[in-house]
Length: 100
Image (cartoon, rainbow, N blue to C red; front, side, top):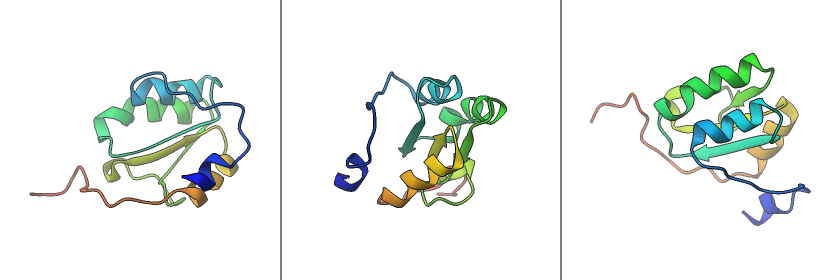
């Protein structure tokens, strides 16, 4: 977390739900958003909005976004998303499509 917080930023903001935070990226109100532990239904709709607005979705590992992984980086550019991914410590999560 210390490494992530040392990246020069103008500010850190969270305005509510994952979908609202992701739409903030889509509108240009934020450069990026990341989350681990949310479910596919929390990010599916806003994910479409981000990509249609020209943003990118990545896995927190920096790889391709996987809707069922329960983790996401939504960013205004691939460069910003990849820079954030390099600083995150990934936590293991049960996938949304996993059988119990």
